[in-house]
Image 1 (cartoon, rainbow, N blue to C red):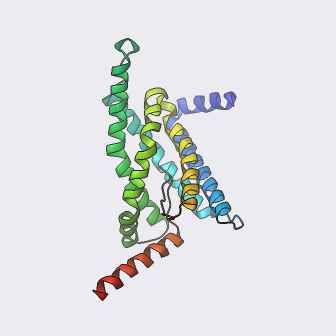
Image 2 (image 1 turned 60 degrees about the vertical axis):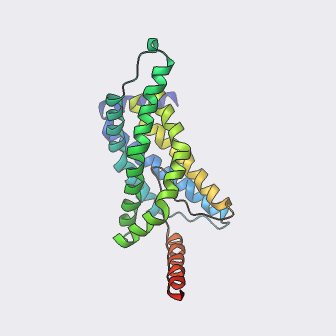
Image 3 (image 1 turned 180 degrees about the vertical axis):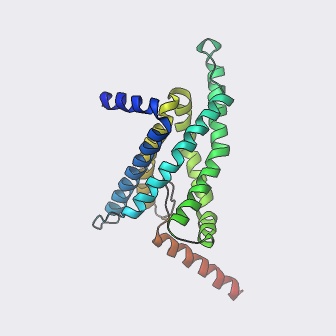
Length: 223
């Protein structure tokens, strides 16, 4: 494992953006395959790999990697970490500013961007994209705030810049798996397509959403 890490670091030092793009795409695909496996197990049916869905995650992960990397560099310059001699309070304050900026600026935009991008990659129109945002955006953002501030505090405070994108992507693999399990176990079965940065809304969810909208329209007409 250490030899693989050394080899990856050497390649990343020469071609950081290319290496991060490939790595993030691969990890995105792995996260989706794991999520599909858990979904298949929870629903008790034979696993059928939806490779198109996985390819969408690979594409999204590859697209986001350079953006993540540049964004982390911006946070580094805007909120430099103080030296150890300045005390823990100053260190915690600087990390807190990075996390707050990331979660208040990038997270809301990134989640919205994901839903729109996935919608169009699935061949759907803008009406479908707006429906997804209306239904899933706020629950997804709230779920994000329950987990990712703590993850990013570790990332920004202790992980070297070159490893921050892979670190967040590795955490995302387990985040995907947890959300898939929690969704299947939930009594209310709230659909939370949260996979930060790997998320999806499948055809069954689209039908479920449309049925709820149709029911609302019938109730309004009945009034």
